[in-house]
Image (tube, rainbow, N blue to C red; front, top):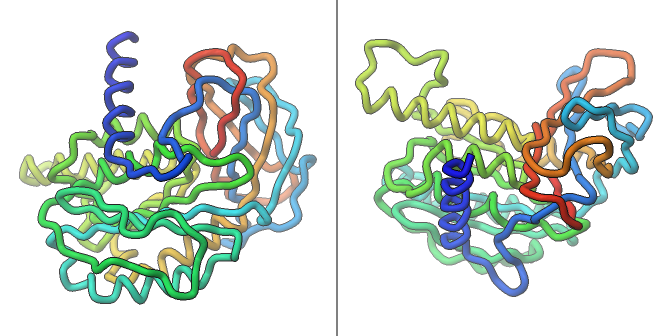
Length: 314
């Protein structure tokens, strides 16, 4: 256990170092839990279900039923982090990114905020977190050789989410990392601690899920495919959508709209853990009690290293 914690601490420390924080936004995890917030998407027939209340949800923490204090709907302000692959393989798409990001900014409400992070060999905060102004001042997108997708994802996962807001990170990449210090498994571990909901949008050249890996593939490609599968698991762990090959073909706008509409129509459940030990991993299960067939997507759990007075979100 001590080795595991040491490894995790090293991953968090590195991710915090590569994250560009400004003002009072600190890249840190909370040390304990008082109130837990869980983002929950509920679909039926592929469409969001509106007007659900506390009575429509059941939630367990470590298998123990919890009392949900509050269900908040779409009014909660959203912080959006766009994380965009600018490695050599994306050179033909860079010229349209600025237009796409302005289109994305137009989808946000005045109390939402937008950040743009690009990655290649290194990581750059191209646009600091700010309100969606009519004229965004974007620095030029530049192709940057290698791919540090793991480090870029780690950077947004460790950002603390201000009370009363939610954080959605949408990552556009083929998922094949060639440069990061953070491993795919490190990203997955961070996802279990993070307050961010992560959506991963893969390009047509993305690696295959583990179940589709063929025995005859070269060793390097087999490892890349396994790495992509682990990143998909990380997204799912936060309650976000898993990526899908071919979903991202150069334009950011359409896949972002799908991810954002899904997130904006989701609910936030809040409860105070009762009857469970404070420290350690807390597996969560959320279901809808209303009759019918529903697809429920929610954060899988959260990690509390010790008892304390704080809160965590998802």
